[in-house]
Amino acid sequence: MKDNVKHQGIIKPTQKEAEDAVRTLLRWAGDDPEREGLLDTPKRVAKSYKEFFRGYEEDPRQTLSRTFEEVCGYDEMIVLRDIPFESHCEHHMAPIIGRAHVGYLPDQRVVGISKLARVVETYAKRLQVQEKMTAQIADCIQEVLEPLGVGVIIQATHECMSTRGVHTHGVSMVTSRMVGAFRKDDKTRREFLAVVGTFDSHKG
Ligand SMILES: [Zn+2]
Image (cartoon, rainbow, N blue to C red; front, side, top):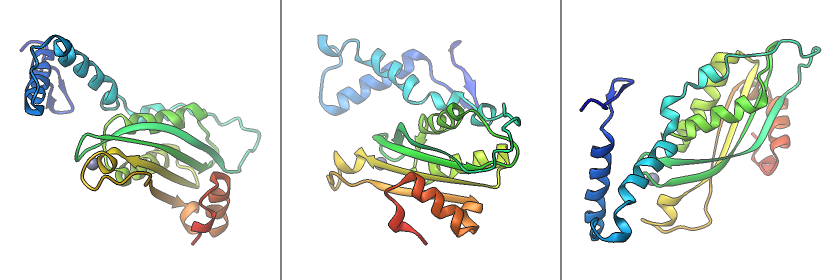
């Protein structure tokens, strides 16, 4: 048990326990974990999980902590659009594949744009509900940068819908969270939606 690691109050199983759990699921699927093609699968799945869920080890607030103030008085909206992400739904652990658009209206401080993408990435690499992820990204940026406003729009497809259950293909879900000026000021919100594109008819 010595390689059990306690993280955020959760006792992590050992590598062996994780691999045994995969063997159980392989049997649950109706296959034989001891056949040649599946022998290394538990190890590969455990390794993949480290990548799929590495967001639990990262602190998005830390990511945003380094800011710049020398921006020559730049006080317009900053938008990063089409940030691709892969996540997993917390109900079925099936992939959620999508894009995020993140904008904010700085108040003195700005961050490097790669940091905004990193925040999306960190929240995506956890078990998620799209609505929750959208709110978490917006709230994190608002809390740490304290800008005049934040807008986050996420468009994603959910494989738990397309590969099981209702088997609906080609459907994407759009969620948004508008904070501060993006919520209160019609002009700011419209500017953001126009920059992001596609959603112009969505005004209101
Ligand atoms: Zn699901």
